[in-house]
Image (cartoon, rainbow, N blue to C red; front, side, top):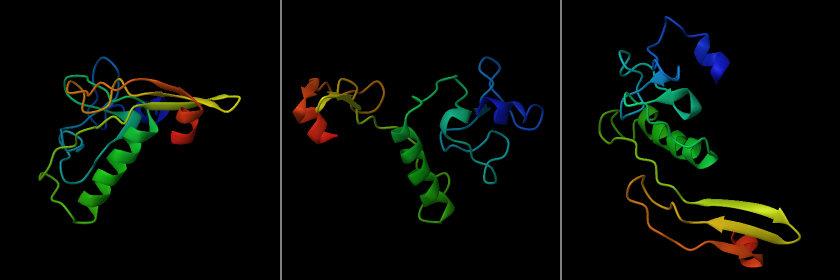
Length: 124
């Protein structure tokens, strides 16, 4: 998103440190509430806290924005909160790894053990 957000210099408000588009807790672009939303790698809140650059973040933000844009929820009814499902990977030879040490909302994580081997691959 770097080239995309860079092309918006002077048009949309951006965080001074990382150049990402500033959004409120409802993913609305600051100063354009109700007409422009930003999500994923291009967005950051006023404190400069960025969500992990993972597909699960994009999926959750997409579902959240779909509900808002399709009228199932008001744009200021419920703030977006990311809920981590952990990380999974296939490492070859019928083996995988699941890291559930960060499951939950940031700051409220639930500790789960790491799972490796065939069981982790089957979960994936």
